[in-house]
Length: 152
Image 1: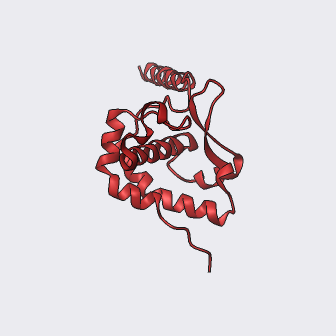
Image 2 (image 1 turned 90 degrees about the horizontal axis):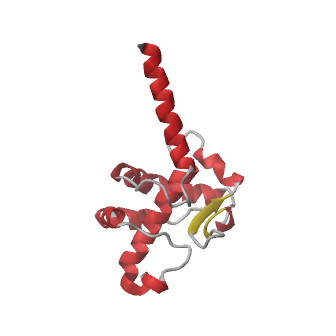
């Protein structure tokens, strides 16, 4: 009986990994959660400061448009050091970052980024995620706008 449970668990995990691998684009991930947004609010200023201290710029991690014309995100190996010992994977952190940032932009700029005016590298945000961004609007704006400090 115990072996069957392990086999079922292995099968389930294999299907989960396969489903994630089948995602068509970077943004075809499950919607972000309240817990992820709260963790992002706390972790983003540290990430931003780490990027500054490491002398990394936006070419190390940035939104792009993939070869099919879909919004995507790329990062290089220089950024991976920040994720060591963290609960985040780069894929999930950057997904939450781009969706929170896009949501805040849509709130601040209203219809300016809708329809044909949406920047090609801006992900589409579901109503569910927009509601999360609205719920956390103030802490997200504080986190995203945190200034970096020079090391003493």
